[in-house]
Amino acid sequence: MTISEVSEKYEISQDTLRYYERIGAIPPVHRTKGGIRNYTKEDTGWIELVKCMRSAGLSVEALVQYVKLTQKGDRTFQERRELLKEQREQLTKQLAAIQAAKERLDYKIARYDEALATGRLSWN
Image (cartoon, rainbow, N blue to C red; front, side, top):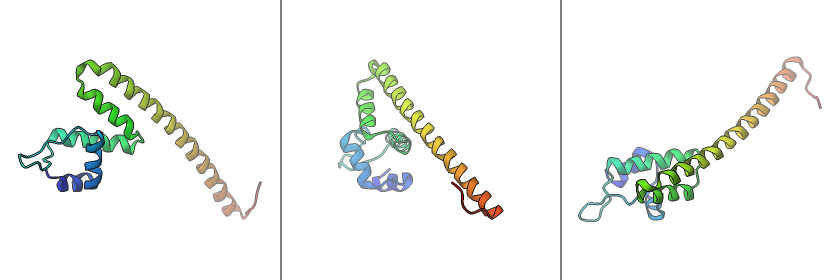
């Protein structure tokens, strides 16, 4: 796939794709003999991973570290596992904070609903 096809399919700008490759958030993309990026299934798998992890809040730095470890081979399984566990722990904390904020908003909305329904439009 060309960079424009990948950009369209994954809704990521071509500049972002180049950036991810340049900083090492994805491994170097396969290229044609002429040097044009030719995304393989393996390449797009990395893009899917990055997109998923970034949308979950993982840092670019963590992704770069993960790719570097992956490129070193099987001997880095333990390090990769630990990195992923650390990231999961951070996401779990973020989820708890988001849940607490949602519960607070639900409470406030319910109070406004009650006030509007009963005509009591002020409270402390």
